[in-house]
Image (cartoon, rainbow, N blue to C red):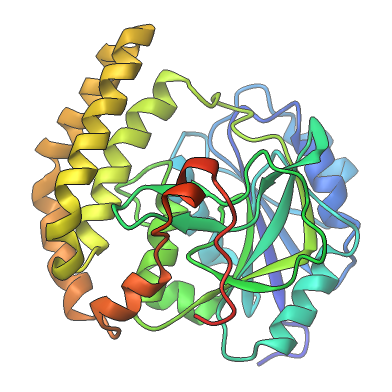
Length: 330
């Protein structure tokens, strides 16, 4: 391996992120010169790349000229990365000065782990958490652990189900083995899907509380935008069907379907029925390729359904309150 090969490559992918990308890149470049930084862009018409390149000469810029989506855009940028570890940072996420130091320490402390995720604070109100790793309920609904809560005392490193895509690192060889993000998802749930597939082959994800990030969240597209609702409904079902082992899929499927329909009715009453039902229809009509992917994913699964079940969130109280579900072991 060449001596100038960086240990970490940090990738940020923007789309209509003109309001936040400068702050994001300032935080990344402040981490030091030993890290490689790639800023890819999915066709933001108002992005001034000449000005950004002049301001951040050490950053590698990759404007794609079209919206490839989160999954494909990050995959393409990752192919250009040289680091042993790949970090994916949202353009509305702002890492702390010691974020990389904390991640390096975590890599040293957990030499067998290939995924690490950050402690996120709400950028608008840093007294509230934006998340502490992602959890997955036993019926296949993901949620951001600790969202909206205050920081608990003595928060320690812990195993979580999967990383949050706003700010996490993954060992490069693991990312490549998994085939990167699934590009069929385009955007939303692809981070949980990646973590799910990693877990199925025996990997785990560690939450690093000292790796702190301020995150706006859905700054480009909006939390309840039509785009977010369509892809959220579609991709959640795809993620669940293709990854959940049959022994867990069959008993949980009625609850998954029932809650999906209940949420769809609620969103319909809020005036979002058209986009929500289109998302569900797209999930069902696109299920053929998902079932083929499921066959391959399950054939390569290296852990039992029971072991996976132990990593899921079963407590109704935790699910309803989005309480952290941190574990001392995978």
